[in-house]
Length: 346
Image (cartoon, rainbow, N blue to C red; front, side, top):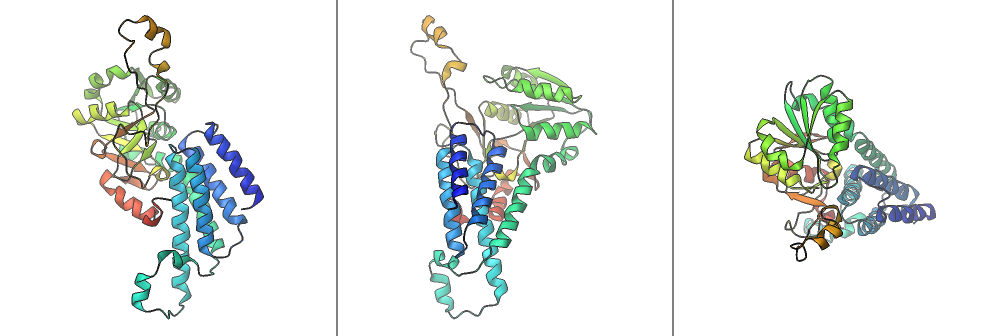
């Protein structure tokens, strides 16, 4: 590995371990930039060595921040790019094969990438296109806003998502609608969303989480962002989102998720109470220690403060992505278009 790339890798690892780089968008961009520099500086011997380099970098980054699924997603998309460029090059070479059909079917797949074909230029170009795709995610999704938001509708949102904010702000330029923003306790990050929307001239109502079920009957659509989309179409989202989804389902309100495809993961979720895709935070933001000590009934209480909720696919109505709008049942096709099954587990 090039010394400059190695130095940048160690710096990035330290940043994501200490949460200096936060948000799936920022992490995905930084990961892509690192992979691009690593491939550009790599002395090309064969495609297999490049794939091993990308996998090695991906494993180190994922180990540093396993809950940031966008890292693994973009690494696997780069691997798929390399595979596709290699196959395209081989098919275009018109090189006659001396192997029998039986041998072609039964040979080890890992041997396929040892042919000394230099596809570096085409791989680098495709990676740059992927970086552009990720960079333009907010704009591409926002441009679809007027197709999904209509005049005089009441839109409910939860938490803080740059994708959703830009989506609603874009729609407000041609549609007049009302936004209801949920507080998103205990972080109360919904306050920032409410302030941003109101500054852009959107009629905004701010409500506590406890009022969601009562007000949902008046809502036309729920539009939210998410941390990750799993292979079954389920969501890993901010804690409290499952309550919103259940209330929307009960009142037959469409639950729409605005998400860039770099958040689409080929992994399947485990049970909801598993820590595989979750993190338990300190309970201090829910119940401070002094309150617990002074309360007679709180001494034996167990206070759980998870970072994420899991929302099953049956609660999701529609995904609005940078490749158009899709039903949760279409996720399998998006996976096959952007990932290779050989790379699901690095």
